[in-house]
Length: 484
Image (cartoon, rainbow, N blue to C red; front, side):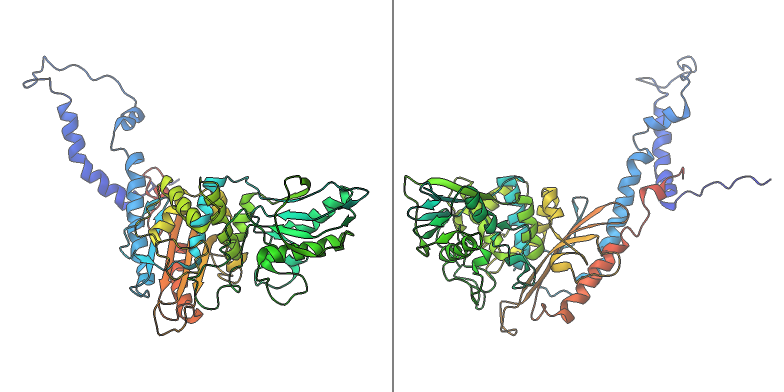
């Protein structure tokens, strides 16, 4: 019968033991000396009997304290080396940052860049921090009390800043590449009026968006953005300013929402005799019906997964309103930065100019994005698109270790013409749970000509994914254990 083989010590453990042996020996000898002078045989007293495990546990340089640090240093160094496959393909106008369980890696390739839609990560984190995860938006209908089912005069649809207010037809309309989900039903609001006894509106349906200012578009968005990629927005907006049956978005989001609500009322069996328009309620108006949105966590998820620009811009205004300011972009962006700063995010060189990331004037460091991901509420991370599964990543990384495991926010700006500044943008920022259990938080923002073309950015994304998938390449704490 052969004796069992003894487990081999990991080389790093052996080296650590050899390095510490002189220190341990000197410390042991020093413990035998009296306070002053040299001990004589008569001075020595027997050492108390101590169990072997107790001796080991008293050693401040024990394996249990040093192994995690040694393992982390080795693996972080190898991860930095592996990321050279990414940085070697990046233009000097791009940035990359990464942390492992919140510990930043010294990559030395960070700078302020055009962030595109990764700005929405900052907005999402601030929204949860300022408004709260359970926050909801309420849309109200007010007017005079119905008499025999008839509301004499106008009713007013008052916007509560709900970015997902929609007719039930809209999510299935195929008008957008990424359909809205978690919508707040205008049809349900119409049915509530029916349930409350309303059969006829003798006057008009008016819309009220006075909760926010009237900046429907941001002037510095590039050509081909306003009314196409985002806007018009206001505190009252339905179907992203679309009206069922119309080919184009409404020029005025409030007027468009009131027109859309007339159709929803008609579909519910309510006659509207006076048409639609924009206006405010009278002081004598009473509440006739309300509809409440899904919790903010759902709204955040829709914004992040679908890269919903309208949702982002409206959230900025709501954040401003709830931070002691007004429902406008300026106050909202100031409140976003204040919220991030309060969470310990480094805002060096940050220039926020909108909530959607559509502006070329914005500048964000990759480390700012990583810091935000690290401190953000879990609902922000859970709301990100999942590789091969949802949102803007549904058709990306459909095979391999990233599938179902990588959660991230994408960002894209074409910025025509290609041969002139500002450069195109392609970004990916999020989290990946490594096979060793560590969380890799990362931000890769590419700023260079035509980088939004798949042929140019996908090799860089693939290099990043491959490097993260291999982490850790060095020994784990368990593999370094002398008792394994």
